[in-house]
Length: 353
Picture 1 (cartoon, rainbow, N blue to C red):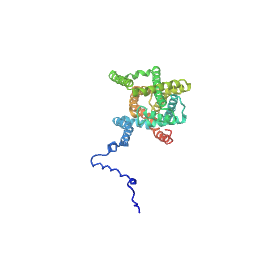
Picture 2: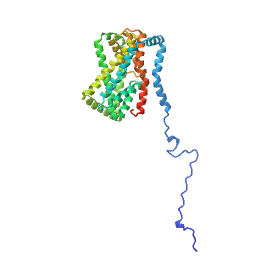
Picture 3: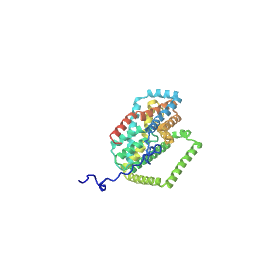
Picture 4: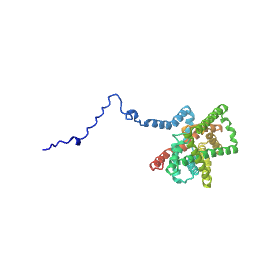
């Protein structure tokens, strides 16, 4: 009777010997240790930065108010007793400013976007400007809106550059026109800084431009996207200026914006008994905004301080000038802040932004 045991040729091959485990203290295999695992970025740092940016205007304003308590008290007292009719007119001009901004945004873009959503995005963008200086909050909201409407990134960025250029250029033209038409410009001589301030500022600006030029010339990875963006911006600018409706929206809205903002300030001044004509108030607003508008301070505090100083130079009492600027800031920034924030949240939930 034959044996049932398997033959050696059919038996399974022996298993290879397993490697001994790594001794304790020698570390894990390469690429599997704790040093190879990237640590997630902590959200607390970004949260603290956003909180600091949001609180910076309030802290600066609080420090200025504490240092000027009598002027602040008198200004708030006058603001409480202001004429509500003029304040309501100023609120209407504040809404017109959003309409003018939406016109400039559409005029700077060859593509057509929904006008209602564009106006809503500009109203919501005002709430974002309280955390970021230099209008960066409004530009960020507008960029998100244009990308959501299918506008390419290069074209959306170029439209923001054209918007800023048209806004600053039109404001300068309006300022020159008021300087030529109003004799009050002679009083602004005291506000012009002397050479000890102008020369360092010019040197710093020239140095920044020189460094930027060298970087664009030497660093090829930086030169290529910047050159492409400039080429796209020039092409879009030519296309926009080939359409009369776009030209009217771009430059008409850019000219209307400083006039509407200055008229809002004049309405607040009339409600408080400022005692200055409309031309002087608008000239003060244009001069103060042009002088320190480029200072990167959130909330426009540098412009507010220069505006109070300019109104005092025109012959207004410091308390009335302070109350006028406070009323203007409350009417244009703080009153629309809550509805603007709610609208911004609604647009984000609706995936418009």
